Image (cartoon, rainbow, N blue to C red; front, top):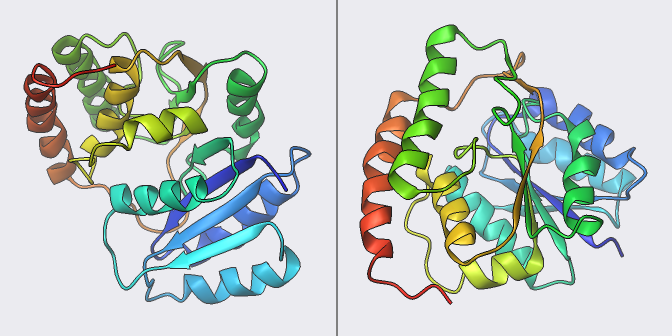
Length: 242
């Protein structure tokens, strides 16, 4: 059995899921994948079931009753992974904005270099974003700067969603309920790992906006992050981090 699991939440990703699964499954590292499927109207789940016939021991799917949010999908996947023997647990988008070719580098940062959390970073070496309008690049870049200012974290890409966790990180940070399930979820998970003193490495990636399918982003998720960060920082003053 593989020690590495890639968790991919899906909602209406019929146009991407087959290519994504085949790409990950073709890699030498022997990754397993868990698709957390939120009852997509476009029948994404049907395609995953067909793919499971090709990869019966490596491709898994958890189907939920509806669109319950990105954060809850990852939490579902994390608990699924921790109930099994995976040591390296990844977050990855279904739309190819996260290039599967970066998976080995994220894994190596944890497995070979000994880091507890590896982040696929858009901003650790300048700004590496393709196909975004300048307004969105600036919003994302300065959102990360704002998070660093408020929290004190040194992470350049605080809102990144492409990550490799070691098992011990998830076991620790999930001991308390996670408050945010939208955009601020990604920030909260990094903040907890940082507060607990885990070692973190940012691995440079090139982020490409989706070219197929519809984006799930909205202005509301940025508002959640802005106000959520302040709440998260203040709340941290009253908790023990040991």
